[in-house]
Image 1 (cartoon, helix red, strand yellow):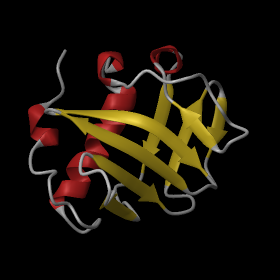
Image 2 (tube, helix red, strand yellow):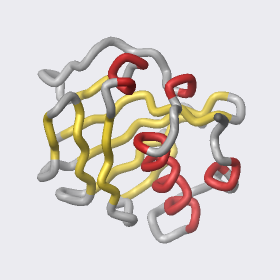
Image 3 (cartoon, helix red, strand yellow):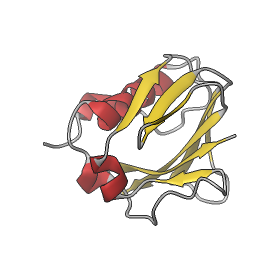
Length: 129
């Protein structure tokens, strides 16, 4: 199954969480994480690196289920200035709850690093602080 096109439209130029861009990206992350098989869209990475406060998402990790409980409001969504195809979506403390490998994170600030390659968006990493 491919990515739902409606969720990927108009993401270019998203500046903050008060736009439809953020809501669409938020919905994409939520659906890609729990609604359909998106393993082919994830950038292959090394296994979990919790000690470094970065959880690298690989196909194996995704298959073990990454669950998001999604608050619709992003704290921020910003393009990484030195790489136009890279975005960092930030949730404030307790804004996003996620479960990885049986462990639930809820009282943390969360950053989701997203890459755009051609017309596809990839979750590169989830950083928990």
